[in-house]
Image (cartoon, rainbow, N blue to C red):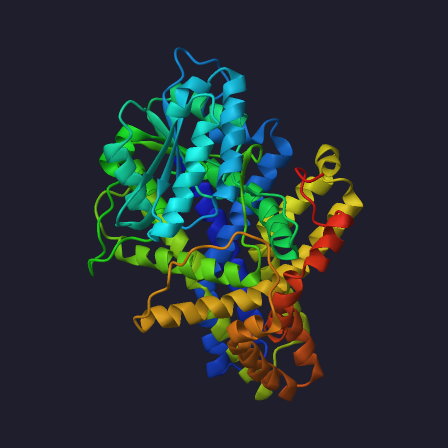
Length: 548
């Protein structure tokens, strides 16, 4: 594994240096200025994440193309042998907070029924772990679980527990369950309210746990559920392609020090309960994003954390519209940036600390991207010369590296006849990929400004509200979109004034990368419009295999 990691970091450094050289060469073709120097410095700050994207993507693509069984090759644990004895007692733990139980419970019914049909259902019990604080919502929630329990073939295996105080948020909810309600269970399956897993996927993870007694977490790859609304449909189409290559490449070199994403994962109770009681932050506040910390603590204690990079049987719902997506990103950002306080704490291996750094990098580059946009507009307005040819190759290389996971994921499907067949046909798949790439360019411009605003709020001491999540498709009105996105639109207009002062060519260069800011309000409304969702679905554009 050491050689794999050395090779990976060498490749990452080579990609980072080449990207930096291309940008520096483009900027240095004319006279250097303060603006150009600041632009290069900001770009260098974003390079580690961009190079990591390209590195994981290249490794994952090669494995997916040339390995007979990529998921099994990367996972590296025997997961298909019959159970050597009784199936380990496993608790299915579902965390909920102000959720619509009509959405939460049906996937759980399917999972329990399929486990029963497999002949292993008696080894599993379901625990609905509620952090709902509103008494009326809690009563509705409990009534729904009671009806669910009464309809089950074995009502005694269905449990409902609600905490009076949601201390420690989701991590505290899970640990309270393990401390007080998990006696007699060896494993627990961590599910979110929108998780949907198959019995085959769950049993595969249980077999892996039975085969390796030092394995503490098996994190299954997660894909999006079939979606009718345009926003989640396009988002998850690209995310699926990107996560497949990313997780495969990352799993190859991270091995037993892999990540945990908080759900759709199987966990060994004893070490988790012993090791993963989270510390408080230096200011006394709770850790919000618990999962990566828990994985790093387990690996630091000598336990194995591995990712199973297989798409089959593990899904979640994605945000139904842009407002929900931006709010979710703001919550994740607040949690991931807390990790900077934990990097010096004892108990982590070097790879564990890298996992925390990697989670920080996911969001920390947003202000730098925003600064680069401002500097580019200023340089255009001041007439600072950057040769078009050099700029083209620098921008192209940057985009190819940044979006390499999904681009190579798309290439894998197009190069494999069996995969093309799963997606309908190559022409329709390529059309969906092209549409998704355009959507992503627009979305990322908006997302980076939103993340920058969120970081500014955090720096001013303002906390992100962890409000209940809407998981239901809905339309977004022009008033709601304008209320949320007017800062993005205004910022985009100011930047494009600078580009316009530089001439038409500058505007054309900026449109693909920053045009999403000008279009943020119509983008929000249009991608939530049911008619667009229906139009895409009827034509099977950006359709995933489960839909077809």
